[in-house]
Image 1: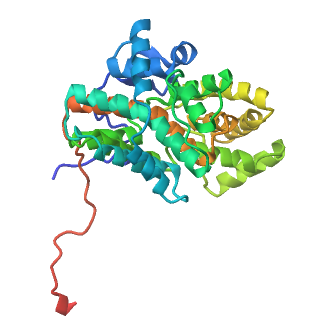
Image 2 (image 1 turned 135 degrees about the vertical axis):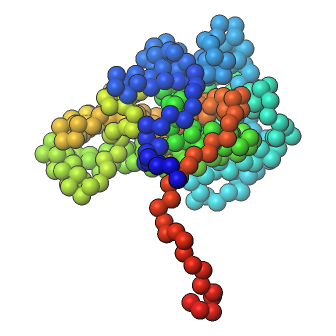
Image 3 (image 1 turned 45 degrees about the vertical axis):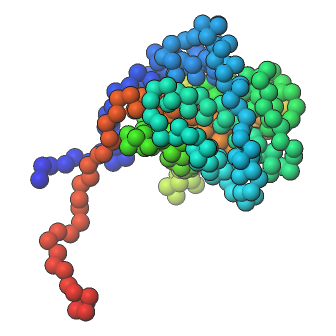
Length: 376
């Protein structure tokens, strides 16, 4: 048999070609279809970025207005899905609630197994539009509050905050959530996106692909990292520089991971973290919180000790906490954004499909003789 070289975790393996997004880990740059993430963070919106991914070009004002109207009309959920949300156990994690609702949505789609460009695009837009509603309705239910129906006069971020809280959101809160959505929308072949593409490569339906992606996102080393960051920052409240340094030294001496630092691709500052830090700082100033000051202290110590930079999760947690998002909904905030990247990659996979099936290197015993059960 030919000699096999193993790249553990598939690190460094180029699996496919795509025009969706590009990361340069050395320079710390990220582009969505050729547009720099800093330009999009400054000038664009989640709806515009979503249009860019789905249609491969930035929209005109008319195209964007029509697209936003289309998404807004698809936001509400069928009564059967709302009933499912009411019936699920209260202790169920919100991310499990979400993926269960997506599976149920698939059962209601008569075109479930139809895989065509038009049908795929329809499903993608429907999934993007309904994702915030699933998350918000579940939050309403577990708060024992009335269901707050979506509004068609608000953008994606504002409508989400409206559904979560039942009050008109402040402009800075809308801007903060919209920025987080833009920055998390897509990031090449991360674990959940790759899971979605693997599922799509079998020609499974889009709902099943989203479920595959959400199951992967649920892990603490992917979508769950921002919640662990905010929990970490709470434990560090009130610690001075010396105490923080001692805490870091203790973690490192025991080989423990400090959440929110380092990245498989970036060897410098994650550009998304740079943008989120600025927004988290603005929110801290308004709310009187000190998340960023504490985070910056910790970031300096970790860099001195390990040379690691903060990643996107490090400041995302501070943004979500300042917006009043419950900790266990942080993963779903990620989902609300990354559903765009997932569905775009599914469309790409369906259009240029080849079953994803890597090899493995066997390292077990060989040529073993079978012993009958009576003789063992």
